[in-house]
Image 1 (tube, one colour):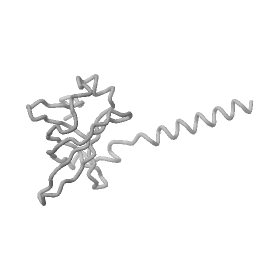
Image 2 (cartoon, helix red, strand yellow):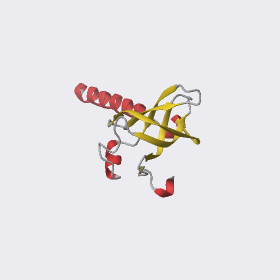
Image 3 (spheres, one colour):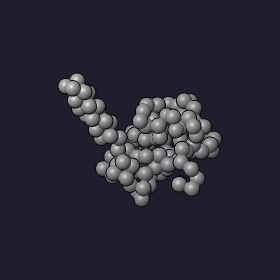
Image 4 (tube, one colour):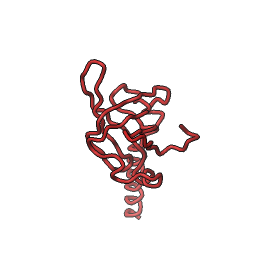
Length: 128
């Protein structure tokens, strides 16, 4: 009986940690605060629960700021036709994204346009 209670307590703690680790989009990003970014990719991370692209963006003052751009999960990207090399370091891209509510250089990607005009997204056309 003690083993059952200990197992249930551990399972509850792990479920709570997992739920806390995954954030609500609306809590972190503001859909009405859309940003348009253009720059050079410095790094791409295919990690769960979300893939990330890091982008060097030159501001109007000439300073370069590195942005952390959140994508969907790698699984969702693949289901929508992405490949691991769809975006790579040193690619030049344009991005439309929802800015983070905390004002940092963080955003959730809506659309990526490569230099050849190819558009990459993981959101259906009706949701854009």
